[in-house]
Structure formats: C-alpha cells, structure tokens
Length: 536
Image (cartoon, rainbow, N blue to C red):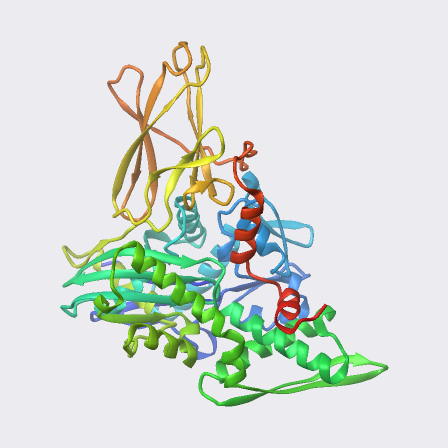
C-alpha cells in the first residue's frame, strides 16, 4: 500500500508526519528538529535556501528573506488583506499573474504558489530520506478560513513539489483527529489554534471516529508574530530611553532584535526572566554599542494581555452564534506554538473554568492528524469528517452588496442555488462576480472569480433568469453549474479568475470601513511604539 504522509504547511513552521503500525510519528528535519521554518531565501547568486538555512540568512538582507507567504497565497494584490500586510513585511510584494499578490526578489517576480512549493519540496526531501522510499501522495492541512481558490493553489503547490495531494483538510479538524482518532470518545471539544500568523477556533463533536465540525471562527490578524512585535516595540523604547538611540530605522540591527524578541518570548514560557544581549547592535561615533536588557514574564504579560483577551472575545462570539454554552465543552485542545505561553493557558483556563487538555503537542498535532487521515484514506469507514464552511460564499449585487449563497457554518458537502437575471434589453451574456467574506459589502471580501454565462437569447431586461448551483465538496472546493437554455443538460461554469474588478459605488459609510480596517489590521512596530509608549 502506498504511504500517504501528512503536512502542516504553517505560517511560521512546517511539519510532516507519517503513520507506522497505526502510530503517527513526526519526520525529523535538519538539526534533529521536528519542525522546519517556513522561510525561503533567494541569494544574490541565484541560489535558493529553504528552512533553517534560510532563516540563518537573516542578516544578508530581509528583502530577500520570504516568510509568512502562506497569508498572501491566492489573495488579490489590491485586496484589503494584502494592503494591510504590505506595510508589515520587509520584502517587496507586487502584482503577479491575474492581479494576485506575488513577491519580487531583485528583478524577478515569484508567485506565492512557487514559494510554497519550495517549502513543500524541502520537507518532501526530509521525509523520503527518513523513510527511505519515494512518497508520491500527501494530505495537506490548510487554515479553516482558506477559500476555494487558496485550496486549489495549495494543491498546485503540492503538484509542483512532485506530490499528488490526495486531500486538503482544515487545520483544526486535523488537530482534533490527532486527539481523538480511534479513542472511542463521545465529546464536544474546542480547538484553540494560536499560531504564528493567525488565530483559529473550532468546535467539534466527536462520536467514535466521526468528527463533525459545529462551528469555526478566528482572527486573521492575530498570532505569535503580534506577541513578538509587542516585545520588539518595548525593547526599542527601552533602548532609546537608555541610550537616546532609535533602532527603528536601523535596517541591519532591527532583524537581529526581532529574532532576539522571539527567543526571549520562548524562554519566558519556562523562566521568570531572561536577558536580551546583542553585542555591537549599532555603531555611533565609531564605536559599537551593545544591547543588554532584562525582560521578565510580568512585563511580557502586561504587554500582551490584550492580545490574549482578543482570542477569548472571538471564542465568545463563536459560541454565542451557535448557542453553545461554554460549560458544554468537554475538552479544550491547544494548537500552535504561541499556546505554550503560560498567560494563554492561564486565561483560557479561567475562561472555561477548566485546564486545557495536556498531552497534545501544539506544534505537531496538525501534521499528526493529517497523517492519520492520509493513512485512513485506503481503509473503509476508518474515519468520517463532517466539516463546515468558515467564511460565507456569495455574489456581488449591482451596488457592491454581498449576497450570501452559502452561509457560514454550513455543513460540508453543501449545495445551494441562486438565480441571476439580465439587467438590460437584448442582453446575451451575464457576468456574476463571486466573493468569499462576511456579509455586508464586497469591499473587504476575497474575490474568487467571475462567472460568465454566454449565448443567452435576446429578450427584454429581466426576462432571462439563470439558476446557478453552488456546490462545495467535503474539502471546501467549489463547483458552479447551470442548466442549459433547453433545460436538458447541466454544464459546469468555470470561474474566470482575473484581476479583481473595479468596485461599483458602494452605499456604505466609508468612515465605518476605515474604523473596521484599523481595528483588524496588524500594527507595524513603528505604530506599536507610538501607541504603547506615547512616542510622537
């Protein structure tokens, strides 16, 4: 039987797992670690480095160091999400094919799919060396909020890496599999996933080997990186107070300090205090100035408490939407490296009145669950996954409004039908834009593509009405079909993914949009210094 391994293609780290004698195990990577940094570096000589080796190239130039590309994958360059991210990433983000976000290194543009494929290729090499055999098939875990287009690009990245992607699975669902597969549970669990780039939360009901997702939510702009940035902003402010030197504009020093901030955060998960030391961090008047600072856990908690509170607010909204009392949750499963922080565990314990489940490795459980799913694909009735849609899918109306076709929390697979009509006399073609986002307007929704229905007979306006059937499969992949004019056959309509079309005049309060954007966007370190420490 062909072995199918599982991959957690993370924002910060990537992890692979396989199943041996019914037991899931992690594939070790370079240096004996169980996870590989999701980092790619393009050096000036044209060579490419992936993983830990790429991360060690930090001082070569951050504009060549590609990190967090997972969050750009499949998004339009002019989308609100990419606009928010561009001010945060050091490398250059540019329009690529079909108007999607791409990265520019030197004079060459690389698609985000290509970058993800290089990460997958590297982890594949580790897996095949460790197992001593070729691995043709894989299951890849993706964020629950990923759109149909993003899921397709993940499959494409896997194909570029030489794999057949047998299935994509939502990360919280994979984590639940790692916890409950073949353990005979009858429970309602909450998966709290605080990773490097985003926060996801899902409620699942486990009955034997049937895993049903009840609800999924999250925050696209909340993750471990935000904790790092709070520390970084504090270190910069303290150093300025001590030395009158501002490190915000030090292109070489700032990456070193950011890396030190992350290390300090990790150390404070075990220690009460830690020392941040960077010899010769900057030069002034011909002399190298050292950076030395002590950071304690209480200060870290004060800096980041509001971030953890934001996660509990997301949980509260999710439970309220589905009319679930928090006392109904039998177990809380913590996923993502940031959940190792004692403050996170403490506040979630207080919120639910119980300690989160121990014994589940937050860095590895998604890959382990994906591997278990891969292993079960060749077996009959081994596991049943009943997932849900985390972000609604709909179409744009003439005013830029968002008409929901498939609602949030719909159980997969799911089918819905919507009717579109001509708007002018003798119209022979209808174009309908498809988006994925929260109800309201399409301004902050992700553009999936445009449906084109051609060869309509000429008739007065609104006389031609065409039913469109939107079908989501168990993986969250979308297919749209319509009945032919004769009504005899059904044909599939392809989404023509082009650059996001200009938005019509939207009848919305622009200031309210600006307020929403400001509240959800990730602040730059410069903005954090100003906000947290009252700097002008």
